[in-house]
Amino acid sequence: MSDPALLILYGSQTGTAQDTAQRIARQAKRRKLQVRTMPLDCYNVATLISESTVIFVCATTGQGDPPDNMRIFWRFIFKKSLPAGSLCQLDCAVLGLGDSSYPKFNFVAKKLQKRLVQLGASMLLPIGLADDQHELGSDAVIDPWLAAFWQKFYTLHPSLKLILLFVLVNQFLLSSANPAEQTLPSSSSLLAKLLSNIRVTDVSHFQDVRLFQFDITGSNIEYTAGDVVMMRPCNAVDDVQQFCQLLRLDPESRFTLRPTDSTPGTLPTRLLHPCTVRHLVETYLDIAAVPRRSFFELLLTFATNELEREKLLEFSSAAGQDDLHAYCNRPRRTALEVLADFPHTTAEIKVDYLLDLFPEIQPRSFSIASSLKALPNRLQILVAVVSYKTKLYKPRKGLCSNWLASLDPNKEDIYVPLWVKKGTLKFPRDEDTPVIMVGPGTGVAPFRSAIQERTADGITGNVLFFGCRSQSKDFFFRAEWEKKIKARQLTLLTAFSRDQEDKVYVQHRISENAELLMDLITNKNAFFYIAGNAKEMPSGVRDALKGVFQQQGTVSAEDAEKMVNAMEQSGRLQSETWS
Ligand code: 2AM
Image (cartoon, rainbow, N blue to C red; front, side, top):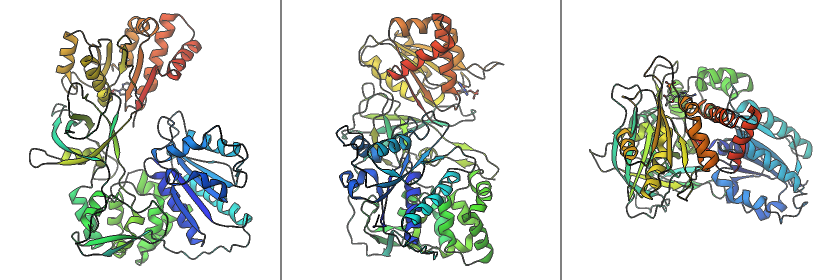
């Protein structure tokens, strides 16, 4: 190896892999290495054969699929026509970011590593498998893995001297601008008018769940049941104001963006040009998320106050990670709250570094809860407004659900940028195939879409297991279901968990209706669906389904498990779960 240039390619869904890749790039730049960082799909894969050292940082999505920004690469790299030794000049390292509470933990990184080896690439070190579930967060794996990587890198390039000087690397320069400049091309998403924002749980109920309706007239959006809609929340007005005060920024001042290095694909295109500080903070900077360790490392470079500097130094060091976790991750402290805890340092932050300090607000996905066949030109979503307590005084609030809940279409016209993506749930098209759907709570959303779509097509084989706490408080869409039941288009089985002494869950109803389910699945080839956000619900439902097979088919537990797995493999058992 003669060329010490480093290429970092990432596949990122929620921004964590991107953040990690950029952190590695900063470390590389501090070492005065030539480094390029980009999403896998922005990279011309055909040139991989001429690279020397590549780090792949890849997330795995909940269902074991690659992130959206590495799908083209994924298809290419698995082409059968690629010759076995085609990457034999390549030294690489694979870092996977995953969550061990999902069955396909770090599946993408593992599969990628296997494929790279098959194509002849040499691995510089064993694969790193970071886990969100680790009590110290994914850095517990990433930090030692990176240390091992640099050690290996320096043994391969002994001529390189380690440069310990910390050089702050900023990707973007913000400079004041005159307002006459043009707007950058906006993204291709639709600005959909919000028509209604209605609470669907009783006011006395602990949880605020909303049904939002958007007008998509004039767009070419054509969604079907199972699809999801993506939207990006904005920061709360009060948070934006506090942020500007802490950083001593005038929210109305304007700037333009210029890249400071030649890495393609990193300049944000969806910001106005020129842009006000308010617009940047409100729509782009993720100040409401729990900050990552790299945030503290960068913050440290602005510290002049001795006390704050000491604390930031500790949080940036390997030895301080337990304390950082206790301060930040466990109570889910937001970046804005951290800034307020370090006021002297925050006041020193240079505006040029905002885009290095804060990741971009990531889009959130929601299962679409309506069907175009029942509601032409409309799109509805069912959203639980997230708020929970930690040991911090203020309750924690989900950014997107609270932002949506704050929008009042009766007061002013509100337009929300959104776009639609194919979801993981696919429903059979032929009218003879019944569907069994298990969707407690907001998990019912994709099934409402499917039921609306199927009944509009005259399909009547629809069985829904719905669970909520109380018949009178959070039984969403009750009147709609009653109409469908009357019209013999729907069989509804409900589990109201708290209307009686003992908990009743959807799985209990599944066991009670074993005969019906067995008949639908074995004689009528029914499809079976699970959706929802309770952590243990999906496995509870699978177990209940196994119980149905054991009891009705008089098979062993092992065979029942095989039957469930076979259904899943053939696409007749599908699930979409979220936490
Ligand atoms: P609970 O809150 O009374 O425990 C929607 O959230 C419904 O899902 C509620 O009735 C909730 O009941 C229920 N639920 C909670 N955990 C569950 C689990 N493991 N399996 C099935 N349903 C569950």
